[in-house]
Image 1 (tube, rainbow over the protein chains, first blue to last red):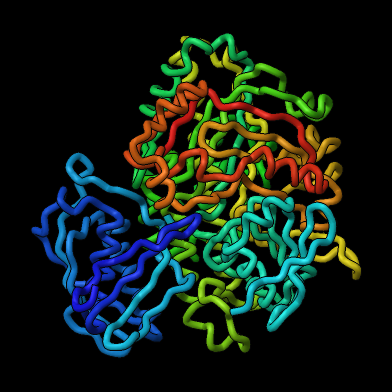
Image 2 (image 1 turned 90 degrees about the vertical axis):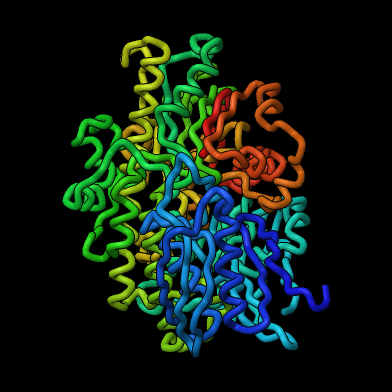
Length: 142
Length: 480
């Protein structure tokens, strides 16, 4: 829809699951990509954004940076037992970023995990400018 | 990008001729109908992409359960020489040593016919299952290192199963060369609490009954008889394996520029086998493979306990015995006959099962006259096949066969197709009691989302890659 920013679109991949995200600029694109991945993992309404984490990532280009960012966000969940609810990219420059992630420690009795994302893959990953927007595409191993 | 051209070689072999940067042709094993089903699928392109990697020997291969993966196709097999060849973590996959084990019992279906529902719900209670599930075992750092170095041997030493089980596993349940120093802190952390857990997605634990025997002699040697109750376990190295792949893939992506050739897909990131990074990855991969073998050994132990308690039967009466354990996501150094003589190659099997022939020294004495048991699970609740490896596979496919049915429908499509249906009830009407820890698992894993395992196995059998020994039908299943 013209003038309305899209949230994210699931990509039908036979074995796994992918997403396509658009943003006004790179900061917007990366923030949306982070929130989209969290949305695919968990029912966000079951958790509260009561704690904060600062997340940093670096890459060799924009695509690599997107993968690195999503890998770090996923690691918060799989390694730190922290359930992200929302994230926003604070600073982004070639090719590093800082993001603020809000969420809370995992509580299996309360939180609903929709699906396990094993990993963020490089397969067919893209970050590109299309017209006035930025577009990103990532496939996850689920 | 141009459409991939498939040239028919014979009834079940389809060649992708060398084009562009391909170094060898691609070769897909499939029936005509399966090839028609590949139209619009990315997997033949992925077979061609793998053929661009240096040091690849003969062909980039795909088994009949081929489907779209990331980087390598699922069902892909590729062997690389040690001199110019590479190893690719994406060619092994995230779930390192994801695999299957078949456990036979002394029970006949009549012994459990009225107790299947009790058994399935007891298994769901006793076997840690589902997203991020943790087990009852919490490993210390030292214990975890021992698991990574010793694999299933660690489990046996700690009272889970018997020494005889080790003979019935690929590589005796322990891949040599494992070095925990090559494992990151993140991977160690993920491995601490997940040993002895089934996981989620397509992993399962299924109660099956031997339904049909195709080869009496092989079935006798494998200890299978009509009406016999058996258990198939499908699981892998859990978060530790995913992290090993993720860590090394990221390191290899950073080095793409210095490889000296263009990669068609970053997920194919690799490193030369002669490099120190390759040695580190293979040592870390071996650790994850060993973790997976210990994991399946523990899952078998909880299964045995559950059967004995639920049926109030002695270990002797239940008589659980490991038939075999195979991995289907791995890269291994193995010897194969090439024109220049026996040659050590690094064989990647990404969703493909080793299928070694009769007489091979890697097989235990009991199975050496028959060939390696090849375990092929179908989709949820359909059942499984046991086949035996052949000389032809050893010569043609680096001793490899298929690994399962192979998805045809995305998870999203599967969710749409199953909307408003109770998959659990549908399966129960077909005589299979299915229970899952996850709310959407049964919907995503519905049987129509997969190819027909009967057809996949038929192609493998007729193409001579492995011969059919027995078919098992499912009667109960737990999913993550």
